[in-house]
Image (cartoon, rainbow, N blue to C red; front, side, top):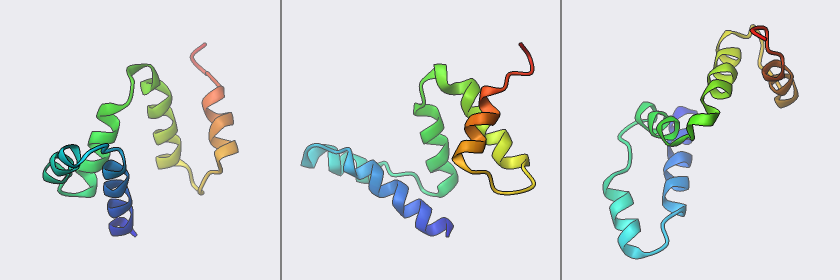
Length: 82
């Protein structure tokens, strides 16, 4: 499953190329593994999404069961620090 995710992320990266030069550069600079792929995705994320992204990832990581999108939205909407 991880290999499929890695390939899907690489294809998404290549879809954004608008010309042969951009495609060639993207092919030369593709991440070597899934960890590097995720690191690049997180690095490109706008700063104003950082807090919610961390919150979502923590809920996904520590939840005793898989969460639905609706459950994640509800979880992120609750702010215990406010």
